[in-house]
Image (spheres, rainbow, N blue to C red):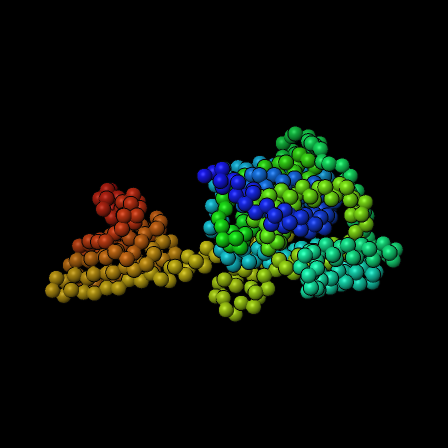
Amino acid sequence: MLFLSKKQDWLGNILGDVLAGLVVALALIPEAIAFSIIAGVDPKVGLYASFCIAVITAFVGGRPGMISAATGAMALLMVTLVKDHGLQYLLAATLLTGVLQIIAGYLKLGSLMSFVSRSVVTGFVNALAILIFMAQLPELTHVTWHVYAMTAGGLAIIYLFPYLPVIGKSLPSPLVCIVTLTCIAIYWHLDIRTVGDMGELPDTLPVFLWPEVPLTLETLQIIFPYSAGLAVVGLLESLMTATIVDELTDTTSDKNRECKGQGLANIGAGLLGGMAGCAMIGQSVINVKSGGRGRLSTLIAGSFLLIMVVFLDEWISKIPMAALVAVMIMVSIGTFSWSSIVKLKQHPLSTNIVMVTTVIVVVWTHNLAYGVFVGVLLASLFFANKIGHFMYVESKLDEATNTRTYQVVGQIFFNSADKFTAAFDFKEVVEKIMIDLHRAHFWDISSVTALDKVVIKFRREGAEVELIGLNEASSTIVDRFGVHDKPEEIEKIMGGH
C-alpha cells in the first residue's frame, strides 16, 4: 500500500508534473532574485535556497505538488540581521530555523493549524501581499521616467498576454514580461538598474558551506530571535499553503511531516549557502493550475531552476529591475484576497475585526507571526463570547412537593460562569432544588467553581440540592475539582475549622 502511494506521488502524473515543474521554475527565477534583494543579499543566496528547498521538500515534505522556495515573508524578517551582522549569521540562523521546525514537527505542532480561523488566514494573506508591494517602493522612488514606463509596460504584458490565442495560455506571462523588457533595455541601451547591479550571480553549482560564525552563546543570542521568527512564519505560511492546496486538489496532507520537511530543507539550504524559505502560495497555485499534482513537479522545478541559473547567468544579470518590480506587483495583486473587501458587509463584525487587525499588526510590525498570534487570540475571544451567550437557565416550580427545578442549557466555562450563577434565585424558600444538567457541559475549573457556589448557597439557605443528568466528561471534571460533596472542604468555605 505504501509503495503504491509513493509510486502515485512520483509517477502518477509524469507529463503534467514535468510541464508544471518547468513553468514554475521559469516563474521562480525572478521571484528568488527579488526576494534575495529584499533580504539584502546576493541573488545567488535566494536562487541556491530555492533550488535546495524545492528539491528536499519534494522528497520529505508532507504535501505533494506544493512548491517551497525562498519567499518574501521570510526575506522581510532577514533584513535587519543581514544589515547588522552579515550573510554568515543569516546562514547560521537558517540552520537553527530548520532545527526548530523539525522539533515543531516532532511535537506535532502542525495540528495547531486547526486553531487558525479563516479570517486569520485571509488577514495573513492580505498582509503578505501588502508587504511584498511595499518592498518594491524603493525601486520606484528617485528614478527616471524610463523605470515607470518599463514597470507599466511589464504589468501590461503580464495581464494582457494571457488573452492572446494559443500562445497566451502556453507561456507564463511573467516570463514573457521579463524577456521582453530585457530585450528592450538591451536594444535601447537604457540606463536603468539591472539584476547584475544588485550582486554577482552564481556560475557554479552550490557547495557545502558551514557558516563562518563563532560557536558561542553570544552568536546564539544574536540569531535565536530571528530563527524563532523565521521558523514560526515559515511553518505558518507552509501549513496555510498546504491547506489551500488540499482544497484545490481535494486531497489531504500530513501537516506534521510538512513541519519536519521544511526543517530539513532549511538546514540543507543553510549548508549550501542559501537563505531560509518556506512554501509559496502563489507558486503552489501556479503548479496545481498548470497540471502539477505529485512530488515530481516540485523536484523538476528546483532542478531546472538551478540549471538555468548556472548556465544562463550572463543573460539573467541583464534583467532590468523594473521587470522584477512588475512581477512582484503582480504577485502582490494576485495574493491579496480582493473578495475579502467585497464581503466586509456580508461577514459578521467580529470576523472583519479579526481580519483587519491581523493585517494592521503584520504591516505595522513587519512580522507575520505577531499578526497571526493577535488574530488567533482575537478570534478565540470572540468565539468564547459568542458561545457564552448561548448558555441559559430555565426553571419551574412543583408546588405539590415545593421543589424548584432548574434546567441548564449550553456550555459553562470561564466566560459564562458568572451568567450561570446569576440565573439562580437563592432567596426563594423551597424545600428542594433540582438542577437538570442533561443539556449542559462543564469545561473548566471556573465552571466547576460556579456550580459549587450555587449548590453551597442553596444548602446554606436550607434547601436540599440534587444534580441530575451530568454527562460523563463533565462528571469527571466536577468530581476532580468540585467541593460541594466534600464535607471537609465545605467546612472551610462555610467558616468552620
